[in-house]
Image (tube, rainbow over all chains, first blue to last red; front, top):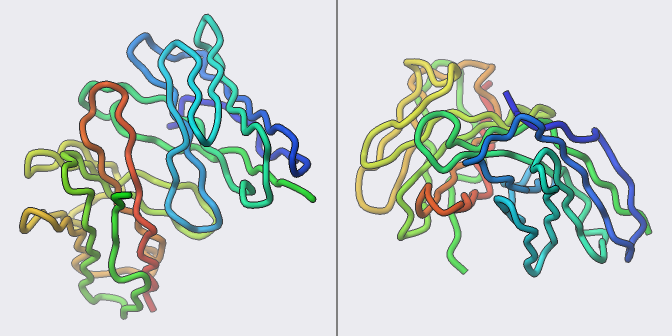
Length: 113
Length: 115
């Protein structure tokens, strides 16, 4: 089962920042936080991941709280093409089942004009 | 940019028939995965594969399923005797390494319809 909790859905105005929260209160020290998204029925698309520090790439920023129990994915200027289901996943880099990406239900983000 | 490719994009098969779904992972990747997504449901892990053997598999991955890496490039999922409930999108993914927080890249999927 997924070890994260996300809101079922969110709306965002086009051009505004989209802030998607995720709770992972049982995260362990060797687990990374990953974000993926899925547009329609396409394959999940990697967005960003982090361990402790905040991360930024060309797609998004990831803010991880100091206690690592929650994080926020930020899309700085959402466009209509960012409408998708966003998944927050915790994964260890060690072997075993905890090393696999296990998807929950995610947050359906709707970007509106 | 390197990508995971899957063929066919859509396959229709009769119940009881065998199907093989094909994937070409990114060339320097070492870990390979199959997932499935039944329409309207979440993406489910099926199996992971490393060093020419299954690393982990889920309860879904029963004796009807098998995976193989027949050569240096292809990674296949075989369903021996398809059932109606096997109708789903099947996604292949690959990862360069499990360490250092590596990310997995997914293909665009094969839509399997069992009739």
